[in-house]
Structure formats: C-alpha cells, structure tokens
Length: 483
Image (cartoon, rainbow, N blue to C red):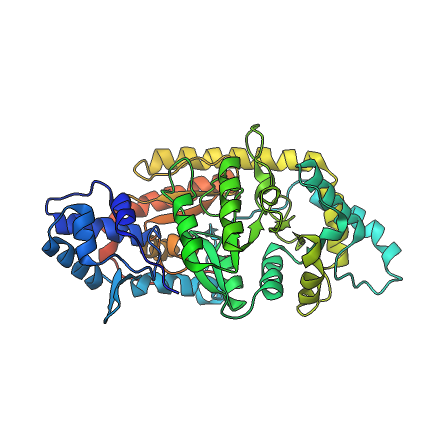
C-alpha cells in the first residue's frame, strides 16, 4: 500500500518557501523534505491541481517544480498513478554499502573510525570477567544450553524494569546474543514475509537490515526537524499508522539513534494510543536507555503505556561491545513464541558472557564511571565542532552515544568518501534511512577518546573548505557500520 501526502500536509511542510521564482523555491523545499526523509520515499505527492489550490500558486509553477524534482531524481512519475517521492541512485547506493566488508577499504596507521558508536571497555569490565571465570565451574556439569537465559541474569533484568515502574517477572525475559539478535528474533516470531513494518527515519541502520532480512516491508516514519525539541512527528506517525496498518513498528524512544532525541511521557502515551488503534505491536529498542548524561528523571518505559510492546535491551553500550549479551522483555502470552523462534537461530547465548553480564549489572558504580566518561567526550566533541566547523548545526543530546550533525551544504555521502583518504571514516545520513534520505547529515559518535575526536574534527575541517563537494571525484564509502 502506497502512502499519500495530503495537500494541506504538504503546505504545512513546505511552509513559507522562497517564491523568487516560486517554482524553484517549491522544488528546493520538496527536495529538502524528501532528502531528509520528512517526505518518505514512495509517498504519492498531491496532484498538481491540489497543490496549486493549497499553496496559492499557478499550475505552471507546480508543473515545473514537479518536473525539476523528477529530473533531479527526487521524484518519479507513474503513468496513470501520479508523482511519487524518490531517492537519487547515489543516495540509495550509500545505504547498500553500509554493511559491506572492511576489506573493501584500505586502512592506514592513524586512521580514526567514527562509523562505530562504541569504544573501549568501561573500567571494571576485566574484573567482572575474572569473577565470572571463578563462577563458571559450577555450571560445567550441565549441558550449558539455556534458550531463555541464565535465571539469575533474567531476575536482575526483571528487577531493573520494576525499579523503573514497569512490573516485570523473570519469566518475561529472554536473553539474546545482543540487541540486534533480539530484533531479528522478534521479527521472525511475530511477522511473516511481506508484513508491513513501520520504522523511524533516520534510525539505527543495522535494525533496518535485520527487519528487512526478516521479510518485512519497511515503511518509514520520518522524524521531524532533527534540531527541534521533539523529534517525533506525531501527526505524521498517526497518519502513517492509519494509512498503512503495519503489523510491527520499530522505535527508539530513549536517545534515538542517530538523533539523540528522548521521547516525552506525553508523546509516549499518544504514540501508544495510535499503535493500539492500528493494532500494531511495538518493538521498543532501549539499548541506549542507561546512557542518561544529566540528572533529570527519565520518562517511564514505553511499555508502561503500551502493554503489548516488546522491549529490547543490551549490556554492550554501557560496558563493552565485545560483550554480546542482550535481552527481550515480552508480554507473558508472547514469550513462548519468541523462545520457539529463538531456538531456530541458536540454542542460547554464551553462558560465560551471561555470567559476566550478571556481575556488571550488579555494579552500579560502573555505570556512573561510564556516564562521566561519555559526558566528557561529548562535550569535547561539541567544543571542537564549534571551534573548527562553526557553520555545522547540531543539538547537544542528554544521552546516547552520538551527535547528529547537519552540514550547511553538500553531500554527506561524498564527504564520507573523501574523508577516507584523510583517514577518517564517517557514517553519512543515508545509511540511517530506509532509502536514501538525510544526505546533508552525518552521525559522529563520541565514544572514542577525546584526542581522537578532536583530531577527527580537525581533519574534517581541513578538508571541508577545499572546494565544493559536488565537484570532487566520487567514491562510495564501504565501511562496515557496527552500531
């Protein structure tokens, strides 16, 4: 089912566009909206007559704006059907390369990889491994297969939800080999090939691939202006749910990856009501929930508003990426289906890693250390950007692991390709869109040491004024985006 954009909605999105001349201003406004994903690829645009009436412009203005949009690759005309938002081929190709092998790109000494929103292990992780190793012999007499997970770890995780105000029992927890594995298991358990899955845009790129490989027909739900106070366009989300009735919806309400937005309690309640009306089950990614960098209280868990929601969490973001332990929190009536799907993929997570996670989740002081480290690195990155790239725009998030940055001009895909030659590996915006949007945006993680972050910004600044990005030789990025 194709979505359509109502004329009044288009008028609200384009706003007070430049009318000198009007056709060019309208085309530029629509191109930006499609490029940044606020008008999702595949959306049917209103007819020329409807746009003429909604905007108070001439029919010729709209005809020429649509024609120029098609010529630029941001729209496609379908005979007898209308005009649809599209993405230029080079933007789509950027996403295609996001999961390719590292071997396709040569690295060199001194390279700084900012594809991955993860860093070295939090101090104290090694000691947790030592304690886990000492506890391991007690389990060696068993077969080691635990499809639901280590009972003690499941209890710890359930108790953490209870402390956050969400009643949870250990029986509702299934331990997985990381959050991404959890997403894939849920998709396999609860959907069939061809089912519609609504997904935020921009969003965690590997979730896009996990849901797509599960056979889902992805429907993007664009976030609003990524520098605004509230990232979720609730009017747009409600319209998407009404028009497409997706079976599942994937969302990241806690320090959304890549934008860093935190969904308010009011927005969670409204979102949950819309999901309930559409009979859509939410897959809620909470992997970044523990990364709060201020003292303000966190909103209630999304599942407190949507009892049928399935929540995914992970230990890797706060402790170490090499610790492949995640979990699923599901309503009681869905747990057996999830476990059945899980054993078709693997028979359980590493028991030793689960013992390590049990040690870490019980050590509250480690979280405080990690948060202090992330806060210092975030602030160091922000200072470097303000000093060396003052025309670039970003908002300082209260949590998460990344800054979502808008370039004043040019293509992020092409900049990322150019920066590889300078030894800085970047993740351009199209990587985080279902198909090709957000090409004026970059995601820069601040999980790396401060000196690396500052050096990376300096290298980018040195390359940035060298000339218009559009005129340089093009080479697509092929780095493997991990997180």
